[in-house]
Length: 277
Length: 290
Image 1 (cartoon, each protein chain N blue to C red):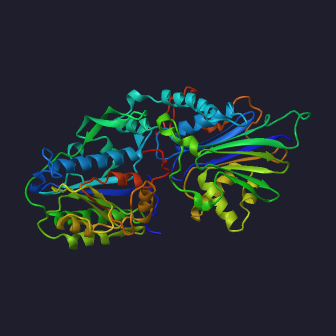
Image 2 (image 1 turned 45 degrees about the horizontal axis):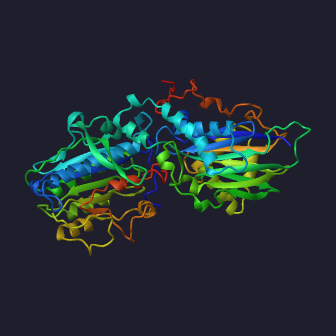
Image 3 (image 1 turned 180 degrees about the vertical axis):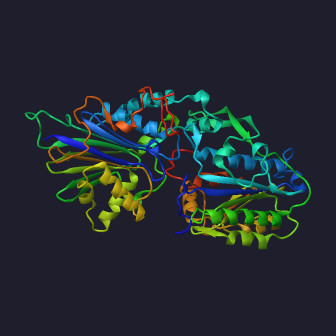
């Protein structure tokens, strides 16, 4: 069965993020005022990285279940990590954990256990800052992703297939369908590379996560990104369904005006208690 | 009739013994076996605290929720005090604040495992409590007499509801706890297994085989380790920490029996931390109290 390879320190898998840093990301996010799409992108990626790090945290350290890369595309296409990780295509998740450029404190509302909510201060590590410059060379970014993952798969032929998460407003210069298809044609013995898209839009439409049809998507960009997104593997669909997500047959790794942070929870690296949320 | 428990354990392949997150303990009147969840931090310590706590201080024969929660509270406190919170990096603190999680199966007998000859009953009553997917199988007359709390291989999944060291996560956990009263008769065998082994076992039984013959024939750790290695290589056993506790009538040959006469819980000596205050350090092979 595909997508069933064990993910462990001995058999790590790979996450590659692609982030749109083009000029159009300077526009307002979700039809609102104040927050830009670039801010939404940075928040989405930083939360994804934070959740992936915490998933791999064990005791006082980190188990290296994943290697991680971030490709930025805008004024230039290339590795987007800052600080000590600058210029590196793929790094261990433990290196990511130990190298945020800063750790902010943010306030979030949490259940107080007595029917109310209270404010709690939480740490919010930041690896990626908002950037918005120039065009949207998404096809070029897919080419670079292909090059990076071709090498990684050659070195890890039996791994759980790499997952690529592309965070964008979709407004690309050149149709990237050919390059995206080439990327997802790469495969380990456990299945093809998975491409999930996270669409950060200027429209104020309600968030949509893991749709199985493009019928309810609000614009052409969303429909094109949906078409490029891989179907969710069965075990991820089953986990999402078990947690109450309305997953239909053929659901895809696509989110509209929502991050894909929940996806991290559905990755199987061992027993995950149902009462750990 | 006196009873003798015998324990076997093997860590997940690719992991060291200090990564082993199952635990088992034997007390004067009962046993406990636990399976710490991979996706939680300091789960090894939590599993160990739970098994020692419940084996040392066994539940009554019909405990209510209040009695169970009263046992768990001090163990949660001990777990929390065992972590050097001030030196955890941001990710480790965030993870640990969620709590550690473990499946727990406790079994207590009416009276002690070793009764004086003159009062020893022919039949022994027992009470079991299970939270999560660690299983008890009773073999009687060369057949499965009962399997608790799971009785089908297909019923295992990787997201059971588990007992947490964080009380906030346990709000509904006792709703899903399973309880069972039973009797142990001469020649019965009780097999307590963590999930990977239990799933294999029930699958074999469903296929018409008698996997208890294989487990009952084990005489030592080495044999158990070879069995586990073979089943993993044949992809019949999930690569996970694997633990078995067999309870039989005393008198059958046991090469690595744990001491049922102990007044305190007995835990596999390799798993003991040097300091009973249990300041945990899970990540490094050279485990030491901090």
